[in-house]
Length: 91
Image (cartoon, rainbow, N blue to C red; front, side, top):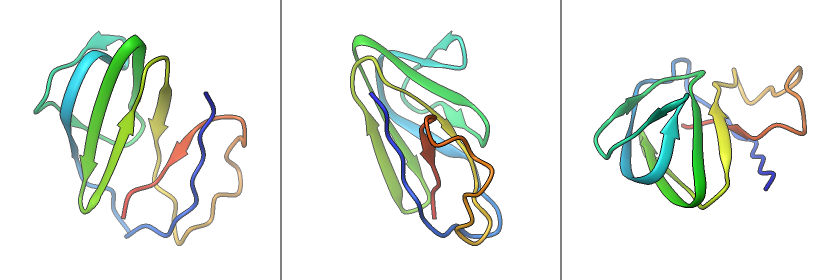
């Protein structure tokens, strides 16, 4: 599954939190609800997994067999990011 989003972010991406996690991984480790996440970390789910993420006022849910990496975009400028890789920016 390929996902992308464009948005305008605040100057600094603060830590987020996993609101739900089963069959889910942060980088290469198993996750659990309440775990903090930071910019640059990779989120992924197993085929039957699900993960909920909250950063500031934004929420994201990853269904099974999905992966994404969190990145901050300065002023909504996404130039330089590969269009085939999921990109999520939280405001």
